[in-house]
Image 1 (cartoon, rainbow, N blue to C red):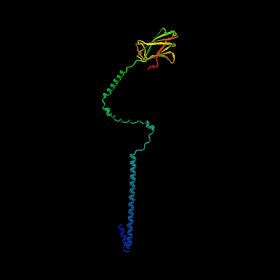
Image 2 (image 1 turned 45 degrees about the vertical axis):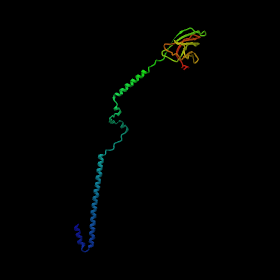
Image 3 (image 1 turned 30 degrees about the vertical axis):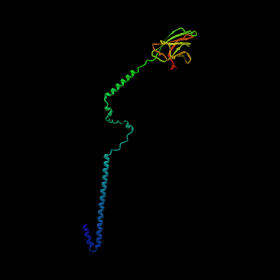
Image 4 (image 1 turned 90 degrees about the horizontal axis):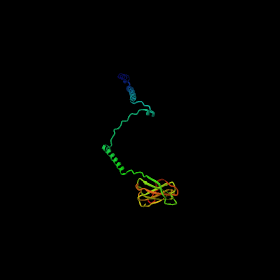
Length: 239
């Protein structure tokens, strides 16, 4: 470069100093442009190489660290896939349950059992009411009803008031009845069920009908008569 400038100065400097200045300026400008362009191209190439290297590194990073996408699992595959056991969480005991002694439950059950036994003792099982009777021929007190039968009715429990129906094989023309050991009956009455004279019904409010005091009934009829059954009657109208 120094040789070129010296040559230009010797060629044009003495005779044409201005032309020599212009030429030297152009030489410097051209040299600077060439050097600047060369440097810019180098910088651009280095930048491009660095970007390619960076892109390659990122692609390599993604390829190494990111797993490839897995195919979606269908419902059938999920159903047949064995499930992993879920770890059990530790069982926590409620504070009240933890504070409760073990003997308290046993004591409560024993107290409930004693209470149930006490209830069963205070409420005894009562027997089922049953009626029984015996029958035998008897003499009638009425000339228009010459046939008669005597029925002795007994009970297994005390009943008061008493309402009984005697079912007969023939129509009852008349009847008499009394309670053994009692001179009279209180609030007594008799009749027929649904106007059927074969169903003789009688009631009395007192005295109580007891197992040791049977009822004696004399049934009279215009034809031979016998008793088919004795049953409980409707509620007493005197209550």
